[in-house]
Length: 263
Image (tube, rainbow, N blue to C red; front, side, top):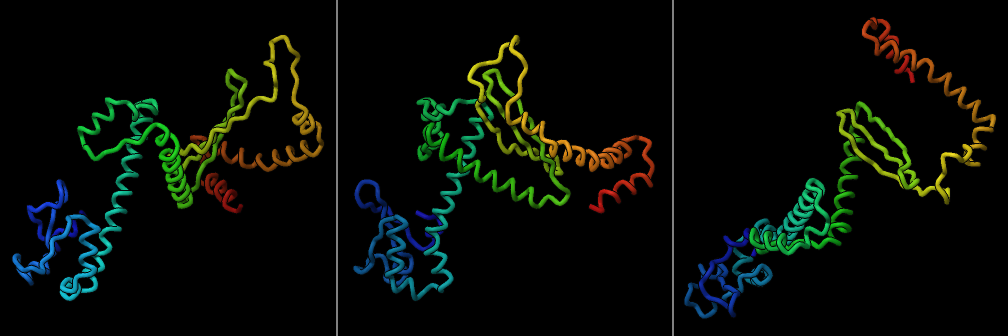
């Protein structure tokens, strides 16, 4: 039963069956009295209590519309709170798994399940598949949304860096990282591309480059654009060399920032 409904009912020691407790509507109890034949007991469950309140004229007459709205919305708020707590519990499970280096199958371990039952019999652990698919996917989506929101509000600016490498299996990997102005790193992705070569290169093999790279390098427009890029970057490099020096003068710094600001 939802806790907010307790003030609207009167609990009893009566039971319906082996487990279901019974209660009275407080308004009906106060108006009719305990021994009145029209006083009905209600199963102490949220659905049954709300159904009675909805059809009870005594309840409808006594409480204001605002109070009645709070009562009838309490079920939805309770379900929403349970969903939030369940989501937070799953997040903690995933954080423990990653932080402690546990295999995903640890949640299926009988000893772990027994421990959580001892702590709270109502807790139901997700299985390995759910933890690695649904829960992990939801956490990643929430983290991505939070990351994009923070980066969009970063007024100073962000830094994007990436690096590529080839592992021992000739697999090409590329990682990218966004850094906020508060030096908070956000790892975006690690891209995997299988090597196009069917066999590993031996030390005695002649050095070669792919046809795509050859076509780019031998294209005159590539070198023209590279030269233009060099001319654009030269002023920035000179200004940065001045700014990073320990003997930079104030007017040099001001002129440097003025040059950057005009773009």
